[in-house]
Length: 116
Image 1: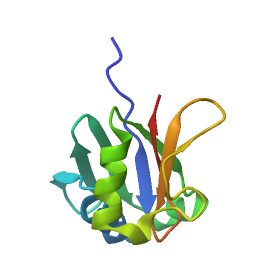
Image 2: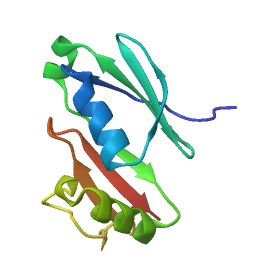
Image 3: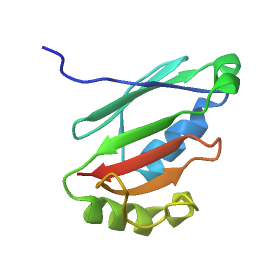
Image 4: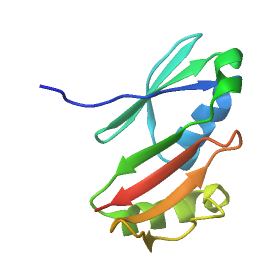
């Protein structure tokens, strides 16, 4: 019955989020108005919300599962190597068994790509 969980990420300047997710991670804009931008790529989707007060309260960490982590890493490393997280810039097997790498936007929103 449940299909997917879609996070909201709040930004003081929503343009930073759009630049990061579209320009660096290859998402597409599905809808955009004054307060919300809906982004999607393949089966992943998220809402970016313009709200400085809520953005100041939390910079989330999101995880996206993939079935080809090497290809996603190569794509992002070629397109925007500056967003690779300094603590996890390469694909690594984690103690819990998943392979992961992470990216970080200028406001410290972290996205972890994971393959089990």
